[in-house]
Length: 200
Image (cartoon, rainbow, N blue to C red; front, side, top):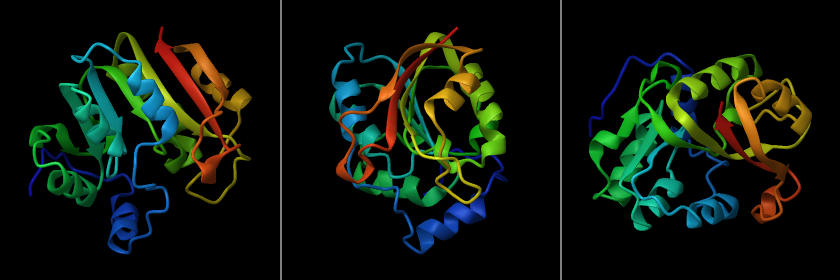
């Protein structure tokens, strides 16, 4: 299976090795409860949605089943995109994007963050914020989960805390919601923050 692809250079081999050796501990096998609850309150099915670093993207499958029309999954590794195509053959092939996130260009109303930010080395966080800002439409939203534990030199995942994240995002995003996640899955309880950021 061949997907729309641009030359990838950002840690592609590292993540390919993870998938080839089934070292995908971040993959819980279903849409996480906080993301599911957020999706459930969305009514406008024409939202242009991106899930970057989407992996097997159970979020995308859930959105599709809820009737959303324009869902895009981006990953630097082809295998999870192949997995999505096999699992959900009706998912539009052109919306499975094999590409480096930082090279992607499009405009979205909603971007869902689920274990992508924490997979990036910390020196790329400012680039992440800038790229998210560029990809979002006016008043577009970046929504999802960030890990709440001490930032370590080894990862992924790399951690952080609410204050650090606010300092990182506040210049370009209005903080709509940013709080301890009360409905995390069991293995992540007490270690997640749920957020809704709106592009300024």
